[in-house]
Amino acid sequence: MDQLSRVFAALADPTRRDLVARLTDGDATVGDLAAPYDVSVQAVSKHLKVLEQAGLVSRNSGGHRSPVHLEAQVFDLATAWLERYHRQAEQRYRRLDALLAAMNDSEAADGDETPPADNPDLTKESA
Amino acid sequence: MDQLSRVFAALADPTRRDLVARLTDGDATVGDLAAPYDVSVQAVSKHLKVLEQAGLVSRNSGGHRSPVHLEAQVFDLATAWLERYHRQAEQRYRRLDALLAAMNDSEAADGDETPPADNPDLTKESA
DNA sequence: GCAGATGTCAACCATCTGGTTGAGAAGTCT
DNA sequence: AGACTTCTCAACCAGATGGTTGACATCTGC
Image 1 (tube, chains in turn yellow, cyan, brown, green):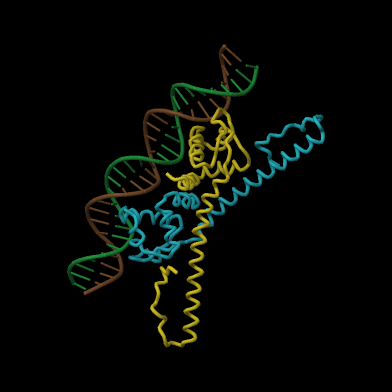
Image 2 (image 1 turned 90 degrees about the vertical axis):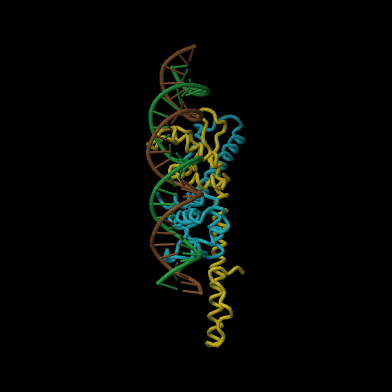
């Protein structure tokens, strides 16, 4: 699996999102992290492994009682993807608005004479 | 499952991310969307259902051959979450840097006299 | 050095997921 | 109307996921 998929998958679980949220307050041990939830420590350990494989979290040595650390840069991977396509979608809306405005203008000017050229497929204009 | 989880889960699959990416070019029918992949149309239909339940996509009537439409606003849900904790993590780093700088300063000024107060736990300062 | 605390690994289980095929509902075209 | 196309639903299957318990390794503190 690619990292972007792992990041999104890791954040798709409420418990894991909560772990991440709490880690923005500072590093913490597995025990500290596990305390608030009513699942076993092993389950939390598994969640942390998922976060680790997504690169969202790291442990200094993997050793006993070593604090879990948030790697906040990895957020950028997900944010970048979202931003890119959000922007792309918005640009398309703007182009569509412009096209519609232009059609209205020419319609108002021409009265009813020329049917608007060749009726481009609005759902798929690729300009 | 809450919507945020559904959104992240929906975006955790490469095929579904590709569908979303292609939908930023404009609405499309299920058939058009399914064409490029070498899986069955049914599989793509399932993917679209996942995207729909996450609110990322909509169909005008659910009816036959009706185009699939991207709901780009829903991106904001995910972006907002990422932004929030990214910012929170960064603020913590800044506070930590400031604290370390202050400790360095006072150390340089005092020489070696006063041991820096009561050694606050750097991994969890809650100021 | 030993007892206890902390954390991971392994096996097991139920459920979810992403794919398949087959059937059928609902449009579209002539 | 009748044939064809498009799409979804249902059943099924293999593999992933999130949880459990039990065993074990490895630190910590007296």
